[in-house]
Length: 282
Length: 106
Image (cartoon, rainbow over all chains, first blue to last red; front, side):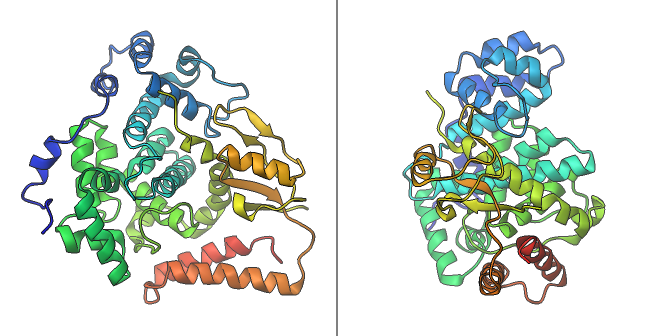
């Protein structure tokens, strides 16, 4: 009998650990107009693991700086508050679910897939003139519900994995069959509780099943998830590919030629993205 | 013109040549484009947690090697798309991905 279900989901989520105090405070302040770079950096410096992860991401190939970004002050000057806000969101969640946890779920492959989706979303966003930073963060975090299930509902998740293996199905279908809910709902509820940006929460919630009127970010992440699977980047918990909802392509005016043109760029960035998987200090 | 090939570290072999700079965790360049890989260098990359590489395409492949790579790419996509035979959009996507995989092979 699973311990998690639709009726007790909210009650269970309230009992889960929150993000670090510093990340929580930063997420609360990021939308405020009076947040200054000095205040932001002072707060970040209180969390060494967060600071290390921010520098790691800032030095990743996505930003293409010709020199090493060695300090938070450098990162602030070079990146600006908007980009830093997105990095903080991503870094806060990555630190909460480190890739070396020994809970039986292959987190290294999971994060490879997540980063791959972030890269796909970022590249597509650039082609369409959308917010690349938000696209990367939303792609990176789209499956965080799986980590919540694996970390805090281990017995339920183990039963889901057994169902997946027995029925040769998507992880999401197994979650629905065993728990009556899936990682998109769990991830969105937790993301909401952690006060992640609303567009990111929506992308987490709808990346498998877009509503009639979806945000461009949700559509980007939906497509990005499918492309990352098609390119065999990491492993998100199953080796299948979900159906691509064609209206996402239509709404974003994405044609196959553009997608084909993005694939090489995605693989170039992904080849250098393994650096993001190293554990930060602290 | 030389072609770039995206490979996983476990697929890398001595005598392959990097087609893209390799960065470490702090963004420092570990090896530059055109570095010739050796057993020692590959072991070093493994210790540093590098997962993927971009290498220059090796010497021209024989027809048999091309056929083997085509078969492997097709099989990988067949596995991934095994429940999508009846979905026209997914078949188009699969064809796009296969064309990408085979780019530069022939």
